Amino acid sequence: MVIFLVAISLCKNFLRREILQRKYKKVYLDIKGKIIDGTFKSGEFLKSEMELAKSYSYSKDTIRKALSMLEFDGYIQKIKGKNSRVLEYGRFKNSLSNLQTSQELNKIEKIDIKTNVISLYVVQGEEEIMEIFGVDEKIDFYKVVRNRVLDGESLEYEVAYFDRRIVRFLNREIVQNSIYNYLENELQLKISHSRREIKFRNATCHEKKYLDLGDYNMVVSIENYVYLSNGTLFQYGITSYKPDKFVFSTMAKR
Image: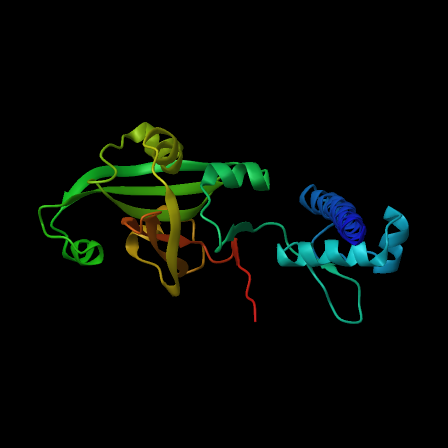
């Protein structure tokens, strides 16, 4: 009897959490949608938590959770003693804790990133790349150079190397569309994780050529080491971003 009552209590608690989660996700998605479509303008202040609670007919706790999600994702800034302020939504968001392709980001963020293939060829004997992969000059690599454009503006420049012992074939069509989609669905490779190093530095001549930097002479540069589930490094590259158009988000816990 006691076990039965405990089971009922646990079930009720689970249902309460599920209902609460659905409620604050609904508020989150509604406010997020209004920020994206311009209903809520950059710099504008949202209503107070109390007013939002009345507007949505939910508790303040539900509203508070929704606002926390919006702040974490970079849509608002919660200001102590004031209402939450809408942040500029002209920035393309990339999470440091996820490996996402531009196609996946297009779907998630409801944007239209276009990929341009600048070059695709095989290289061999590059000392820096041999050292990174721990190989000799007998091993060759695909070198992929691309840039990505959002709303007619080139915001991302990428140079990536793929170990041809693992990625045996690439062509322009695959590189244009999605390399990861090909690797995971066609080659059945299990991509596990990446190690990333972020730098703020002066732009190179190639970055100046293929990025619309405007008055900026700096880029945000991410050095990327990508591994399979068995721990094998199969990709190394550097992706550079126009600094005023990108927000990188991650979660830090104590």
